[in-house]
Amino acid sequence: LNNFEIEIKLASIKCSKYIYKQVHSLCLPTHSLTLCVFLQGMAFSLPERQILGIHGLLPPKVETQDIQAMRFQNNLKNMTDPLQKYIYLMGIQERNERLFYRVLMEDIEELMPIVYTPTVGLACTHYGHIFRRPKGLFISIRDKGHIRSILDNWPETNVAAVVVTDGERILGLGDLGVYGMGIPVGKLCLYTACAGIRPERCLPVAIDVGTNNQTLLQDPLYMGLYQERDRSQAYDDLIDEFMEAVVEKYGQDTLIQFEDFGNHNAFRFLRKYREKYCTFNDDIQGTAAVALAGLLAAQRALGKPITEHRVLFLGAGEAALGIANLIVMAMMERGMTQAEARNKIWLYDKDGLLVKVSKTSYWHPAWLTVFLMQRFHYIYSFLDAVNTIKPTAIIGAGRLFTHDVIKSMGTLNERPIIFALSNPTNKAECTAEDAYTLTDGRCLFASGSPFGPVTLNGRIYTPGQGNNAYIFPGVALAVILSGVRHISDKVFLEAAKTLAEQLTDKELEEGRLYPPLSNIREVSIQMAVKVVEFVYANGMAFRYPEPTDKDSFVRATVWDTHYDSFEPDTYDWPGVSFSPKTDQK
Image 1 (tube, helix red, strand yellow):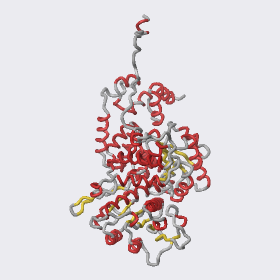
Image 2 (cartoon, helix red, strand yellow):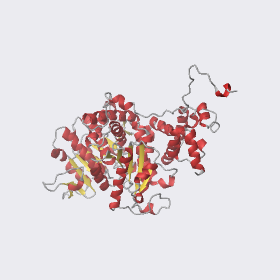
Image 3 (tube, helix red, strand yellow):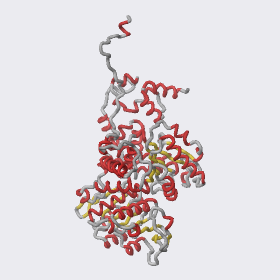
C-alpha cells in the first residue's frame, strides 16, 4: 500500500464507514487526519474533534451551520463573474456537501442560473480550463466490454438515479464531447435541491465516444478522446452494455435519465429502451411537460381551453416534437380525436413548414419519420407561416422570433402566447423585453433561461421561466419512491397538470406562468405526491405495500441538510461500576 492508501484505510477506521465513503468519493490528496474536516469544517463539536482525532487541526471556535452559510453567501455576493461563482459553488459542494445544498436551497432563485442554465453552459465550454476534481463517472468507447467493472469503482452502492449524456448536443451549444459532464452534474444537483433526493443515490455519467467539435480536438486541455464521434454499431453496443450494467448492479427500477444526446439518438433510444428500462429523456419529455404546464396556465388567463389553441413551433427537434406530442395528449383528454388534435399543431424548421402530403401519412409528432418537408408556394419565412396559420401560440427553438413576428402575433391575438425556450439565454428566440414591448404588455411570455422583470407603462411584468427543473426532480422522486419500471408519457401529462395547478391567481396577474423558483422545493414535493398517487392508481408502481398517506410518505423521505453527529452512543450499565483502569490497580 502506498502512503495515501494507508491514510485512507486509517481514515476508514478512525472516521467511520460514512466518512470513509465521503473521503473515497472526494479523492482528496491530503493527510487522512484532515480529510474529515471537509465534511463539516468548523461545525465539528469538541467531543467529535477529540474522538475523530482532528482536535487542533481546526481553529478552536465551534461554528454553527448558520455562520458557515453566512460566510458562504458573503463570498458569493462579492463575486460578479457567473463562471467564478460556479467554480466557487462547485468547490463548496466538494468540501461540504450539506452546506452547499443548504445555501442553494435557501437562494435557489438566485443560484439555479449558476449551477444550471445558463451558466452551466459556459462552464461546459470551459470545462477543461476550470477543471479542479472529477465529478461523476467517465465511460469511453474504449471501455466496451468492461462497463460493469467501471461501475464497481463508484463508491456508492445504493444508486437510485443516473443522469447520462454523450455530450453531442449540450443545451444550444452543440457537440462538447466529454465537457458535457457539467450537465448531468447540474441536473443531479437539482434532484437534491428541488426534490430532496439523497445526493449519494445520484450518479452522473459522461459517455465519451469522441467529438466532432474541431476546436476541442485541437485544444491541448481537452479531456476526452481525441477522435471523431464513433457512429458505428460499436456506439449502440456501448449504450446497450451501459444500460444492462446499470440495472444489473443497481436494480431494474433504477431511473436512467438521458440528457443532451443528439436528436436522432435521443428519439431512437427513447423508443428502444422505454419499455425495457425505467428511463426518460428530459429534453423530449421534461421540456414537453413544462411547456404544456405553461399553456395550461395561459388558458386560465385567457379563459380559452387548450383545445381552441393553434400552436406553431419554430424547430422540429427533440423539444418541439416532445411538446407537440404532449399537447395532443392533453387535447385528447379534453375530448378531441387524435386527428383533430394533430391538426392544431404546426412545425416550421430550417427547410420550411412541415406538412403531410397524402391522406395515408399519419402524423405522429413524437417521431418525425412520417413527415415530408414541403413549402407552400406562398410561405417563404417563419413570418409568412405566422400570418398564414394565425397561431394563438408560438413555441421556439431558434432565433427567428423577429420584431415583425412578435408584432404579427400581437395583431392576430388579443393575448398572444410566446414561449422562447432555447438555452442558454443568449440563444433565446427573443428577449422578454421585446415580447412585452412589441405586444404592449399583452403577451403571455415564458423562456427557457431566466430573464429579469420588465417595466412597461408603469407596470412590472415578471417573465415565466419554463425550466425543466419544475418537472424532472419531482417526477424522479415519485418514480424512485414508487418503484416504477417503465415511465409512460401519461406521467408527464400528470406532472404538467400538477405544475399548472400550483400557480396562484396573484402570480398569474403578475405575468407569471409558473410558480416562483423560490417555491420549487414545495412544488416538487407536491408534484411527487400527485405522481405517486397517479402511478399507484394506474398500476404502474411496483413498490408494496402501497402507502396510505402519500403526502407523509413522500415528505418522510426528503433529505435535509443538517449535519450528522459523529459522537458515539455512550451509556453506563445499570448496577455495574467496574472500571479496569482503576479497579485493577
